[in-house]
Image 1 (cartoon, rainbow, N blue to C red):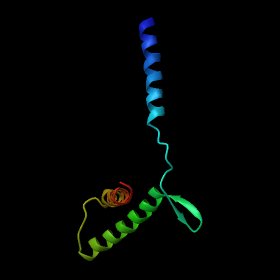
Image 2: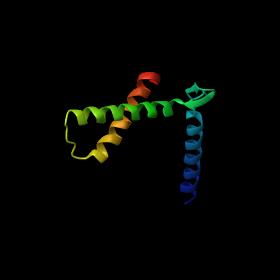
Image 3: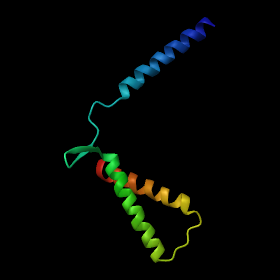
Image 4: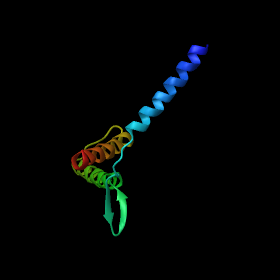
Length: 90
């Protein structure tokens, strides 16, 4: 039992040190919009939503029937948001 407790303490300490060393030292990317700084992920999310609305409009005009739109549109939003993030900050 004593060895197990010491090992557990040592592994917890090692994990905390590893997490502390993995933190970033640079500032998060942000945009200055009308004097207020917005995080870049928020801007990418807003653009991703706009692209999703455009994709929905294109799908409706092409008369494409979606089986599960409740999964399709959030997935498109995530896809566009992450693609924009990678394109600008990747």
